[in-house]
Amino acid sequence: MNALTQLQKNKEEKLFFLLFIISIPLSHVGIIGIENPAIMPNYFIALIVSFILTKKAALSLNKVLFIGLVVDILIGKLIGQYGLIFIIIYILDLLINKVIFIKYEKQIESLSLFLIFSSFIVLWVTSQNFNIFIPLKVLILQAILTFIAYLFFKVAITKYISK
Amino acid sequence: MVQEASKSNLRLFNRDRFPLVSFFVFFILCSILMGADSRYQISQKIKARIPIISSPINNLINLPAGLFLELKNNFINKKLLIERINNLETINYNLSIQVQENQLLNSENNILRKTLKMRKNFQIRGEIAEIVLPEVKNGYLIITINKGFKHNIKNGSAVINNAGLVGQIINTSESYSEIRPITSEAYAVPAIIDNGKENVILYGNGNGELEIPLFPAGSPIKINDTFITSGVDDLYPKGIRVGIVSEIKPTKSPKFNYILVEPFSQPTSFSNITVLKIKE
Image 1 (tube, chains in turn red, brown):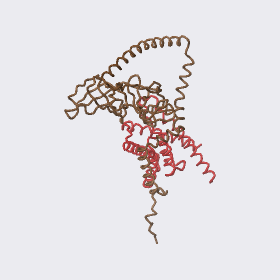
Image 2 (spheres, one colour):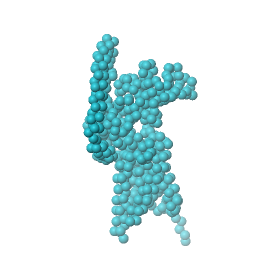
Image 3 (cartoon, helix red, strand yellow):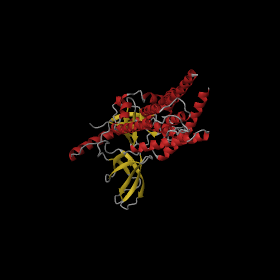
Image 4 (cartoon, helix red, strand yellow):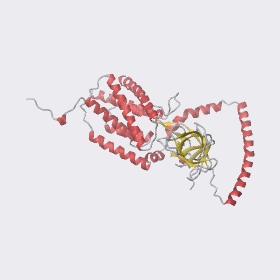
């Protein structure tokens, strides 16, 4: 039983690593057909939200902080910005799960929308504080696209893990 | 007998331990890191010193475009090449005539400057580079060029192209650099109307244009007036074309107008730019 659990955990971690690696080049490419290349999903937020909500890869507060710092160094503008966003996503999910019994699919989707928009609010506030300018309209469109990316990641996780 | 549950052990639907202390510690740590990075540019220094962070990604993203160009070059036929050579020879001939004229004007200008004891501050010397991909990094628009600090590109250098001022280098790594375009919100450039009368500061508005929020209503300015760099900051040489006045709007105060300026340079991928040398 333990060996099976360990095998499952390794599989989840492998998938997380794979999706993380894929997200790096994707974050450098705009969406074909959209004139403004800045209108694109935030793949890393989508990845973290999908893994936290599906409770895969055994993500902990320490792990999400570390992943956030790696994202900051790879593609971020400020060290600590994505670290902060990811720990807030993690803690919000934990807090909501403490007070609301999340059971149905609709609840999970609503929670994912809430977490994505919260993370974009944190991104916007921290960017404004440190004079990193990004138009609010673009940020809202990015949040919507991030939700779509989250749905893709979720499908990938479900398909791969159930194999 | 029923025992009352201790409030400290009360766990609602989720039975995981709530890491409140760790969260606050990490929250403070991240805030400190952001503040330190903003002040000391730590992430820029890390990226510049460790090229493995950004170079492989940039190489990977530029690979398809590079392969396409290589493939396209392989299919060029002789007729097309001869046509291109002829065109280049004509351009070369016209430019050589223009160079003669410029040399004459330059020597005349030198004599006049010497007579009037004027300081010469219009010198365009720099490194030619090409704009490459990526043009976006995690939702932020960037302009990337294919030269870095190994080609003597330095942070803060001004960047121009044949149309005018493009921006300023903000981040350099070994083989790549990033440019902040003149239209980005954090950008300001001292400029002057080409008739030499009004010294202003143009600000990027983040929407592909420049603006002067408060321009004295009494000062003469009209649509299609051209702004050039004034050179007062010693960063941009005097006389580089910046933009053209596209809109003049009154503000709440009758003493000022709002001026919108359309930039001349619209840098596109795989076009050439020149990174100017910083004056020592």
